[in-house]
Image (cartoon, rainbow, N blue to C red; front, top):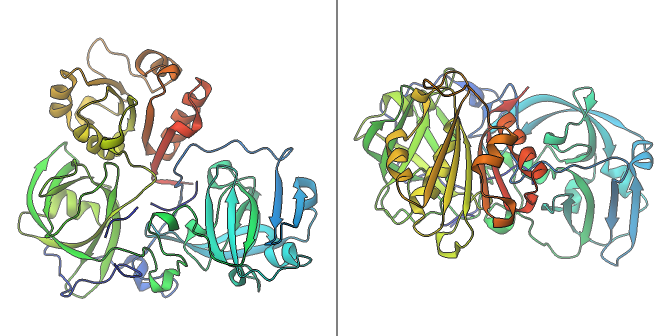
Length: 451
């Protein structure tokens, strides 16, 4: 599934709180919002982050087919050879992801939707884009015409890689990137709008970055830091008070917005670490060396400080304790343990296994709590250390042997959650699929860019 993070609270986009809060101790460095090409709430990204709800599907050009189905059921289709024989265009454009990053001057090649729609007779006004993994996104048909949308099969002079939607993806750069369905296989033309995957979970039906049309329901609120505690040398937990905070689902996240005395704002997304049904909730933040927001949260913020938050956000990477029946297989890379800890803390009835990859034992977040919880029969923890390990323990990565030794077997049909850096998530998801776990049982959350 493509970019995007169910929401719980009203309005067409996150609104500013009645009083805009200056974040004590935060000194903004300018970043993206000083660039007139970067929409509000966005920051400039040098890499190309990968955000997908599930494993990257295997889509082969030999069997790929793209079909436009009109409102009357008429079909217009192209196989890979026919599609790549269409007149192609080179496109240089800026991208804006709802998770707050923007990337400028990206270079693509593909067929214009004007070309693909040229001989399609239709009176439809809406489109539902469909991906090979079952993902959908809805758009007005007019937004695919007039040289504003393409089916792209090349990025930066090379064939489009699978993690970015290859062999072909929809590209609609004037809208948030979740609209640009990856692994595209078809368009359904509709007379009435039908919500896609993220839209059905509370994302805005249109998604204009310049109007900050991120979510339909949710508003900015003021959070007060109630307490902080160190987790590792570079990570700490913030306990936040937010009046009227709604219950969240384990796995959801929030947007954090910091504001300096000159009015400059910086905005990022962070996973919720605590279980639901608590008067306060917690964020655990790993400091990024060249970060703008994480150094403030991981080092500077202290009790009494305030900043703005929007949430809870996310419907694809969530677990509902009330509906739990299957065992839980949780696999974390580094700070990817944070949303998984929310699941662990909320779980009181099903067996759970956590496979946790960290650089060293000193980098393990929640080490003491995990040690205590692992004494409980509900949770079993397996560590893999990639840089240095305790005496008698080999340095190792999560591999096929780890899955065979430490995971529930496929026949137990566990619910699987993987969170970590892009390469880690891609590797572990592939290992699980090769070992016989259904792709539909695997939920993923990635962070960090690819080159």
